[in-house]
Image (cartoon, rainbow, N blue to C red; front, side, top):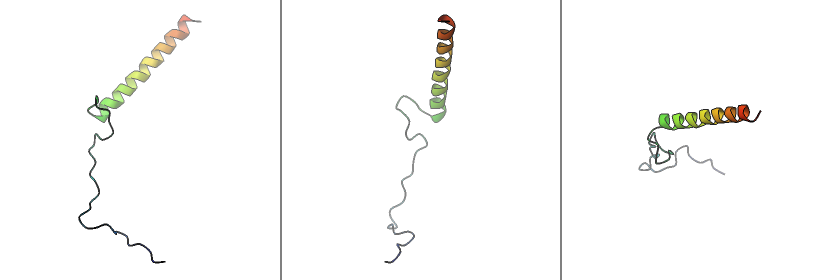
Amino acid sequence: MPLPEADSRPADRRPAEHSPNEGLPPFVKTWRQMYAIIAGVLLLLIVLFYAFMINFQ
C-alpha cells in the first residue's frame, strides 16, 4: 500500500485563517475581557462563600 503524499491538498485550498477572537461569546470583545469576567466571578464566589461561612458558624 503506497504512503500518502505529504501535502495532497490542491494548491488553491489554504488552511482557514482564524480570527484572534474566535470562540468568544457575543457579549465579550476580547480574550482579556473574558479572563477579567472569569476572574471577577471567581473572586465574587470566594467572597460570598467566606461570608456564608462567617454568618453560619
